[in-house]
Amino acid sequence: MHANLEPLTGSWPELEAARARWRYQPAPDCLSGQVILVTGAGDGIGRVAARTFATFGATVLLLGKTRAKLEAVSDLITASTNTEPVIVPCNLAALDDTSAEALLESVATHFGRLDGILHNASLLGPKAPLAHYPSSLFQEVLRVNSFAPFLLTRSLAPALQASESASVVFTSSSVGRRGRAYWGAYAVSKFAVEGLMQVFADEWEHTGRIRVNSLNPGATRTAMRAAAYPAENPTTVATPEERMDIHVYLFEPASRGVNGQALDATQWQGPAS
Ligand SMILES: NC(=O)c1ccc[n+]([C@@H]2O[C@H](COP(=O)([O-])OP(=O)(O)OC[C@H]3O[C@@H](n4cnc5c(N)ncnc54)[C@H](OP(=O)(O)O)[C@@H]3O)[C@@H](O)[C@H]2O)c1
Image (cartoon, rainbow, N blue to C red; front, side, top):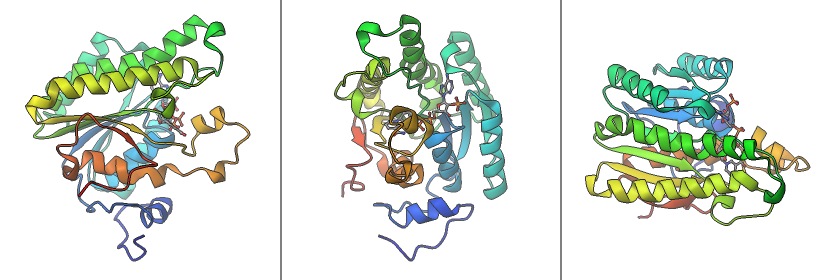
C-alpha cells in the first residue's frame, strides 16, 4: 500500500485509487520517450493500458476496430498528457501482409522505431462445445486473437529491432494455459499466443534487445468479462486500472532481461529483487 503517493500528472481518479494499492510503483516518467502500439485500445483493458502508458510518458499508437472509440481515447490522452497519440483504425480479422507492411512503413517514417507492442485485442466468440463450434467463427477468433498478433509482430520486427530495448507482450488467459470446456476457439487461440511468445522469445533472446512475454490479466471488469460471465456482479471483479502495475512494468526499463515468461497479473508480487 502506498497511500501518500504524489498524484500523477494527467491521471484520473480510478487510476489513482488503484495505484495506491499497486504492488509496484513505477517512476512517473518511466515510459517517457517510448513509442508503444496497443491493440484493442478503444475499450476495456486496452483502453486503460493506452491511457496509463501515456500518463507514464509514452507515445501510444491506438489500434482498434471502432474509430469513434479510438478518437475518444485519443482526445482524453491529448487533453491530459503532453504526448500525442496516433489512431490506427484496423479490423484485425482482415489484417494481411499488405496492411501490416503499410503499418511498418508508417511507424518507420514517423518514429524510426517501435519500443513496444501490447497485443491486447481479442474476440471471445461463442461459448460452445467444440463438437458444435461454427467453423467460420473458429477461423475469425483465431485470425483476430492469434494470426493478427503473429503478423503484426513479424511485420513490425524491423521497427522493434531499431529500438534500443523493445518489449512485446501477448495478452493471454487462464484458458490458454489449461483448456476448459466450452471456451472453444478462444482457448485454442490463447494457447497459440503462448506458443508465439515462446518461439519469438527464444528466437530473439540472442539479440538482447527485444523481450517477449505473455500476460494473463486475470478476471477484469470489462465488456468481455460481462459477456463471458453474464450472471456475475461486475463490482466483485477487479478494474482494469488495478491491473496496470504489471502492464507498466513490462514496458519500462526495470523489466529488461525478463524474457519468455508466462506471467499472471493476479499472482504477480512485483519485480523479482
Ligand atoms: N476481461 C477479462 O476478465 C480477461 C481475462 C483474461 C484475459 N483477458 C484478455 O485481455 C484482453 C482484453 O480483454 P477485455 O476484457 O478488455 O476485452 P474487451 O473489453 O472486449 O475489449 C476488446 C478490445 O479488442 C478490440 N477488438 C476486438 N476485435 C477486434 C478486431 N477484429 N480488430 C481490432 N480490434 C478488435 C475491441 O475493439 P472494438 O471495441 O472496437 O470492437 C476492444 O477494444 C483480451 O486479450 C482478453 O482475451 C481478459
